[in-house]
Image: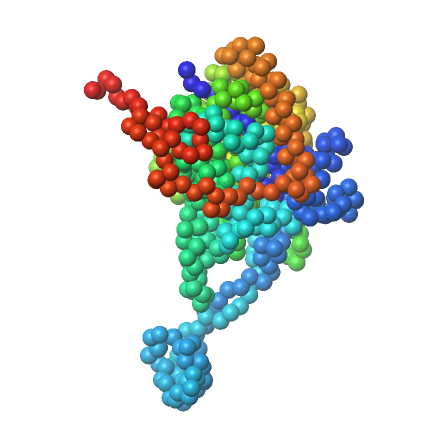
Length: 619
């Protein structure tokens, strides 16, 4: 009997703000919310952004202007004055040129055309007689100036001793802490119920840590005359978010790692967690991705591919003159006339438990993850072009939804969280995939959301954005519309789709299942079948009985109260991340074990070493 993986906690931070308590989702639909709920989210944002008056008109205007997709702000870098080196050929006059320089600054070895004429103390006089190739400091303006950035004023490194951590790891500490604190259950209570080898952590980054504190600094330091630090290389690893969660947040010794699948990375990690819980290898799994790609180098890399929405492209779409400022808030236009995706930063984490543990702890069940399907594209002409793999993942995810909620559930009570990048190629290919899936399964008027219109594309964390916002749809009964464009493009295939251009109110019980779709460079495709909380509850009642479900509901009352306490503290700016440096460090001599059991200090339950062969028919 397969265990059901249920989402019992979630958190993080994105351009929409803090994820827990659905505040990130609420920012997307804030104008469609009741006044009290909207006010609570403004307070949450104000705490993040350091704004003292969350109810003031000017304060709210500032929060609107400095969240979601917008012009790149100088706290990242000045996109009008990006430092670079211009290559120049320089030839001295026939008699050469002399100059004095500190001996310590001489290149080693000395260029062949340089001759030392005189040494005086620490100074030397040099004669150069032949042409040189020079790199001169210069500045340039970025052709891409829009990005989905964390709310202005939010600085995760100020919340704990960051110690030169790359931004993606700072966001990991904040986001994973937010998810754990949203549980409403103290982690020590979970550790008492679960053996240490049955806790999994799958978290990473699709592009590793590429700022100056990680791989970006390591690769560029020598080229710009600086020394590589001892932290840049280890901090740069792509699985470092999982390592940080284990070492500084959970103290976990269980299964760990990350899978990298470009823009589908979060779903790859979610798939590992689902497999672990369903098979019984783990009872708890923390899943997430953190991506911080807003650097000049990363943006230039994607721009060189023609993948990003440039200023010129946006002006062309809107018929603006060459010197006009584009509307950066509308840079990402999924399934409409568009010109490229908008890069973004985000960190999203979810906590999954098996159904038995969730009921025993009274954990809140926000959704259940039925399955994650992954398929490659097969043979390709261009590594970045789409192929057939996403047809397979969507078909399998829809078939799984049908198997669980039935034909009518799939046809009438499902919706799609599309990858929806905002590129001309994506609008054609993904719309065809979705429309064909709808045709094959007899679906008409299939609701399609595309949240990158608000958040931008956070690469490895993108499907985490989609999943967390989907939980908000079930909590608030709102499907977010794609507000950055009025109409779909003429080449979008949507005969059986309803690509939402306005927020749509739906009773949460009218939406049984969401298909979360992700497409990645290189042919990495994944689609998750996610079940609404009321569907999960119905399944749990069938398996465990009505009385057991009533017991869970009674336990859940205090859990929800604790979750609300975390939300209130965070909305006052009083919640701090979990960061336990040099805390409870274990060594081999701390373990108590024999040939049958291994006890890890801090865990009530031991690891069972009486294992059975998985191959009994071969012995």
